[in-house]
Length: 238
Image (cartoon, rainbow, N blue to C red):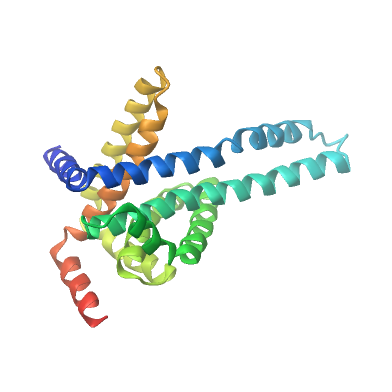
């Protein structure tokens, strides 16, 4: 619990170092995220209706097309939602590295990673969903791996697969300590979501989740002295 409190204090310090710029980025994220997520509900409802209409004895081409179209549509919108989230994680990571960086420069800098983040998002979505549906524990494990891989990929400017490989190594260091802190943070955010949903303030938690999860991942990776040394050497070589 002490480590969790210390981590929250560090996250607060990061926020206060450049809070106006973080807030602007967060509001932009909320506007874009909710614009896309609003399309998710009707697609999900149509897919569910089509799926419920499937009957072994009365399946028609129309119903099959409805289900397939719904599944493809849900996959596309899900990829975009994951991508938007990952893109703004990248923006925050760039701002964590340089507290003086304003939101325009941070977005511009992250834009250079557009296709890499997009590919990362597709891989993340299908790997985690497949793992959760068919294996569960590997799916949960991959959630943690991708949680660490994205900041590593952005911060160190490496490929998707190199970032995933390094994330596995980082995650295994003090594994249970990392898991406990991440789980505690998510539980706190879930509790806050339940409370604030009563007053229709869910958007604040969405923004808090984005910022706090990003900064937590960053801290868990780069407060390790060995990793920090490696990062400095990489920067100097570039």
